[in-house]
Image 1 (cartoon, rainbow, N blue to C red):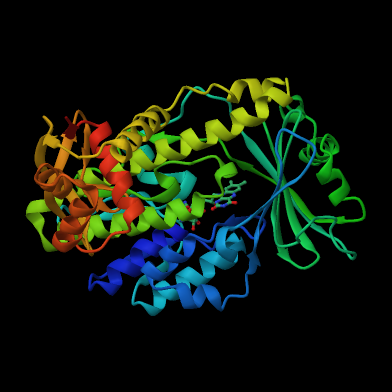
Image 2: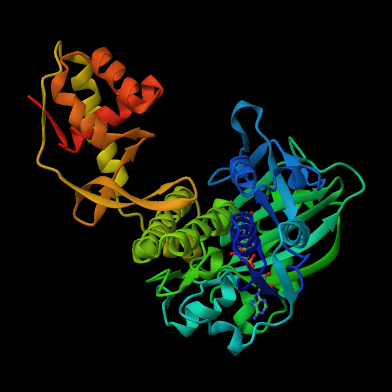
Length: 457
Ligand SMILES: Cc1cc2nc3c(=O)[nH]c(=O)nc-3n(C[C@H](O)[C@H](O)[C@H](O)COP(=O)(O)OP(=O)(O)OC[C@H]3O[C@@H](n4cnc5c(N)ncnc54)[C@H](O)[C@@H]3O)c2cc1C
């Protein structure tokens, strides 16, 4: 394992738990100057990796939501659903907790710089590149892709304030769009916050020789809410700069190598999902490697499956970021926003209309009367427990689908023509495949009809 950030630790812990010897090489833990926010949904990944208790005991600030000034002056206070809590974590402390868990799980950890020799492993072994932006294997295999889009630099400093911060909730991540960039703040303890501005290096003073500190303070000066935030606060550390420009890979796995987390792709920090994506990617890399080791005949399928999933995930986050950036663009007629505001209509949005139409058709027709459509059904890889196995999928072009909203649509497609009433079909499905929630079932049925895998007559 190369790299001991969230992706590397997650993959190492799981592989070790599943009985494989794992060696992890990494430099000292991450930079204390970077603090990030993690959404509540990370808890599922922490539990799946077996580090839930260690994270709960680490004393991180627990966030109740976000406060956002995005394209307008009034704050939007967004609480996490159902009282769930996120985490505000200094990256060095998160890495330390995960690496301690990796050591406890039996991973051999070597703290040093990774050398050329570490990139070579025999054909019977696997190497996972989890070196983040360094992407040592990604670069060696020439698979990293930088699109022509604008570059983004994050300038981040730590601020302390004796009185309370002028915000609705001090546990919140704060985000403000302004004329030539956006600003973001994460609390690390009461009285201490990290404040970052995301700027375009070509369009800020950075290329003209102005110091990072001058650019940083000038950018905060353009904000409304963040300017008030630092009113009586002191800059206790920084600012430090990070390259926050996006990149991806045109292949995420080869014969015996995989790219996990930021080594494969970097998504806009606006999503607050980099760590979640890295943990999920580490988990999936572990599943792919485990499958290749216990079932060598499936090795090629497992690696191809991993590569495809990573590509899908990068595209998903890229689309969400573009939509979010496009929301603020009309308010700020500046090149920073115009460069980032191209918003192609997403395939998902087109699909959603067809699914809604199919849903209302299903609700208004007295009888179902479905017949099987002309879909191709083929065995394709999917995850079963800790392993990648081959199961039937509906294949259209490059897409292979087995589940929609947790409902097995291959089974649904087989059952559909035999029933004339939705409740009967629902009952038959649950008897055969196990219980699912009715709304999920209806969404899957509507999708199946919208995609013409089942045709309503
Ligand atoms: C400004 C900014 C703000 C962000 N905000 C958020 C946020 O709010 N929420 C969020 O979830 N994510 C955020 N992220 C993204 C998040 O930090 C990353 O997505 C996440 O850390 C990726 O984890 P990783 O394990 O893939 O890589 P990394 O965390 O980068 O870990 C890579 C590891 O490899 C090691 N390594 C690299 N090269 C070598 C070498 N040559 N020799 C030895 N070791 C090496 C490093 O020391 C490190 O331990 C932000 C990122 C930036 C830059």
